[in-house]
Image (cartoon, rainbow, N blue to C red; front, side, top):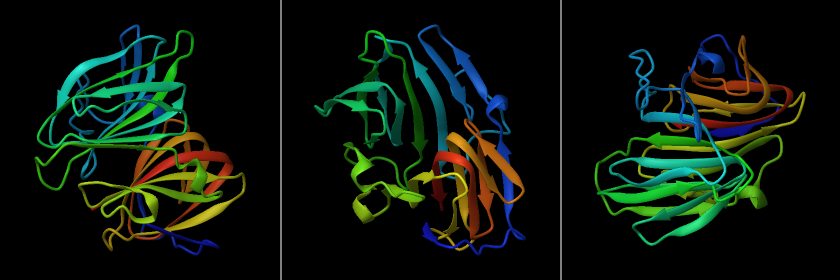
Length: 247
């Protein structure tokens, strides 16, 4: 994905399908409060099984001292963006660290990996987005990376977090896809151009604020498909979001 300014994109050919926050699936486990953009675990909706290679976006709130015990994955690209609080990661590759708010974590499960994710705080809830993307090919050596992108964060624009080739200090992933963090001040706009495929296949996931894209307004927790090439994003108030471009 590319951005230019000022915005000039036409919305005439855009297809936008919003997934409102309050229509998402949900699960309440006492220690875990989840909202599912796509079918996951006991929540199954044939109309929402993912979008292209994007399979999972879970909006999770983890209570203090709780988390996901050691469990296996394979052939999946797994990303975590911590919104509030912190997350303690351990895996069978020997990695272990605490991911803090604003940081981004990547684990390519490859041929198989075990990991656990816990809220290490005794009094603070952890809020995160858990993201799964299918890899281009199954298997491969498992790998792990994490980063604090704050030093290169783009004000009123997009900061690339993951890409197929690790460009612009992003994490190299095993799929023709791109993930960017969006930060727009109130009244600011940006134009997004497709780079992965000429048709343009995007998913937006709101973190906070309010945005307008075409005729749709997106607020915290909303997500949605954006297709048809270039488009403009305008912030009605200070906003943060994740933007995915998918093959």
